[in-house]
Length: 321
Image 1 (cartoon, helix red, strand yellow):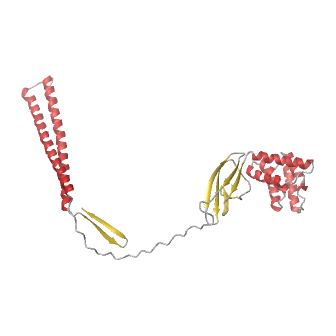
Image 2 (cartoon, one colour; image 1 turned 90 degrees about the vertical axis):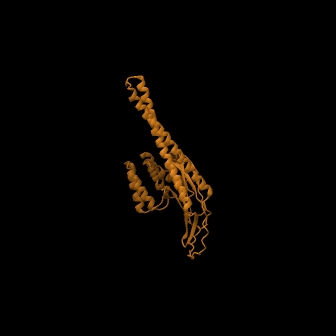
């Protein structure tokens, strides 16, 4: 690693423009850090050099050092610009240096993904994972899913998610839903509501009860009451049968172990159970019939109309039965 870095930093004449003493001192210190394999220190020093004077040599050094440090996205961007700015080699040393940088760029491109963003004409800002970027130039990202957001000059927003794999290059085109330059419609102010006095109209004549409702209610009530009475009568008969069976056991003085006693006992138990069920169903029928009759009576007695009263804030609806 040290040999490759030394090869690329040894030829300081790659950038013929004059440099300040401060820049030269930083370069010499960076070369010394490379020789003692202090990659982090060398990277910091070359970053200072590039901030003071954006030399192609400094950019190439940053790319190679970031590659060794595992900062692949930064290394890909730096090495791409480095190779683009390097002049054509004129001798064996320059050719070797050029080949090393080309190989480093090819290696790092296989480990990252490349995205080209095409923003709409009215775009104001372009963000990749929340960080502002420029459209047109390649953007190197780690493999995986990334969020792209573009905002327009009139508040438009377009957003999309893109998933890329290592070594992949993707073109991402974004557009706004509304046409560029179209301002958002202004909200209209709410209309003033003036309370108008309610007109007093003559109350309509109240309608009477509907005959079919009265007839149906009366028929249901009557049927339930008759059914309840009939069930109670049947229950009383079952009660009498149970009493008679119990008396039969006492009169005939049957032994509890005899078959005759068991038969009479079962018949008395069945009659008593049947009587209880019939009494329960009969009571339920009588209650339901009474409720149906009461509801029908209320329907007949109470008024049957709908009143609508006007108010400033709306309408009040009152329904009376």
